[in-house]
Image (tube, rainbow, N blue to C red):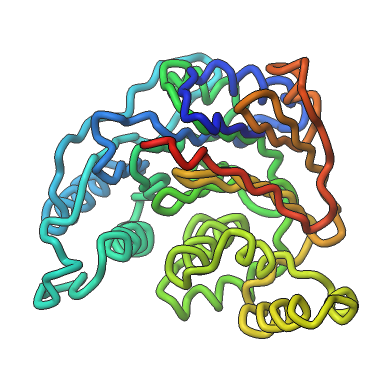
Length: 356
């Protein structure tokens, strides 16, 4: 479930907690989580690294790496409550950081991150920690946003992370029922990279192809869950390759070939090109996803709509969820409610005049 206030108004997390709590029976207590945008206004120019650790050795190794490669404005343990329903959990810390040098201009920068812009730099930081520092996992890395997730029902995770105390203009939430991948703290939704975050119902049966394709561009899947590939594909297609959100959705869930052949000439050529160039980015299997960045929220289902999705609008707020009841719980008097067609994205952004 997710919603965005297009006017940029921030609301406390208790709203999204109430909405996802309506779907409690859809999970089994092995994964719940939230993503929120606008929650770190005092550090909005810094990347907020949320990291979970298995032990103190991984903490030490990671913090040495961070100190060597990043300027740290502030660091602390992620505030959390001790509650009966959450037992053993990883060590949880966050760091507000930026690259030490303006590497976008200084092409003579030496070392591991030479000649990259800040976002590319931070992607490499995340991949390096997750891949090569045993027992350390970055589970959020965007600016003025954060993910909070773990093993438990969403309401328990919310109480544990004190989600009710954060204010955001975009919120997403997920209640997981693991099927063919493990239920563990890093494997809960949302999955993130930079300020991309994604929650997903279903199964990405093309995971192997997607994973190998992403490895060609320096992305490494380490969190043992198929959904991870979607976060990295969004970063590759939209940020690095410059596709619009609409075109990226066509790459992930393109029309069938027979439907493309019935389009007019210009549409046919565009969709043929997308399918040929980004064939390895196509997501197969039943899925419904919500993905967000600092400017918007998008909903997308697979080409046969094997997983449900519904959307609603009230005033400046757009809601999306797997079930209408989750939306009605927090907004019973919607002005409009609809179910998008299979493979048809719902793309909504902040109003142009909203300054963040």
